[in-house]
Image 1 (tube, rainbow, N blue to C red):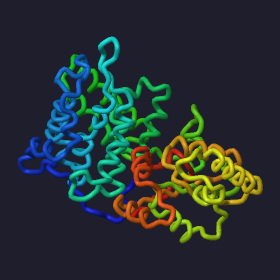
Image 2: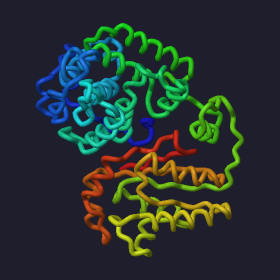
Image 3: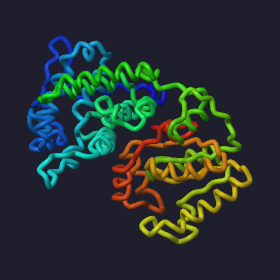
Image 4: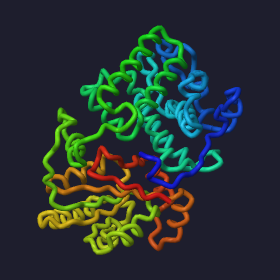
Length: 386
């Protein structure tokens, strides 16, 4: 994500330490955020976290961050972003932590779930003066998602690919900083080894040309093909055999997807799952198999004719979008994702005014699942935010 994707908006994370004293107002932070309070008493494996529970660890991470000259030298908005990411990096541990049958304490998938929860909290505001602006919110959420990568990247089947993928949404120099304070904010026997891993990550990211900016590709199609197949050389210039375009719309109900299509692609053939549901007399709560089948049959008919078209639905998860994009790509389509977003209170208001209103609980359910599209998925991604 880049700051150019939306108008500049000043946003400040509350109680972020500032010069000249850089004082950490921990008691105020703890009192203001229930998601911080939820970390109290959540256990951690003492082999890796002898300092205590998740709350203690999070405070130590914050203290380690604000003590670093590298963090203090950042512009104010960057400092606040990193401070928010440090507080949120283990936000999903209360939900993900388990004591296994052998007594080991695990928190599997807490980084992935942490991204979703951080996005939801920052979007809703959750005791912030204002909700975080889109681009900054996504940078924080992705830092949470990838915060363990610098420690474990060498254990990935394809370490180079893992870093290149992360670089498309996350500045890896900022990610390394977060990983460093994650290590400094704990008590463990292998702390120096972990810090050495972060150092190696920095060097490896520089070698892969993606340390402070996304890894560049020869073309959008080269990038698209790289992320669709394992073992591909990121420097390879793929032959562009696309023949038409499919625009895949993504966003919560009430975000403004229909309006965007009407304003920008009104003359394009349209597949709308909402329209198909009405035609087939199937409600959103019923099984959607017949709706999806009808949509795909129409899509195949147009793709056989190499006809560009729009696919308009919520498409909130990477998995769901990926299944559709696989279908489109098999017909040599060029894929553009348009993600549409509005403030949450505006989404709720619009939905309440619609003739075919979606149950509010469904909107919040989709919000908790939402994975914002990124450039690892398609030839192009556009963000339409208000």
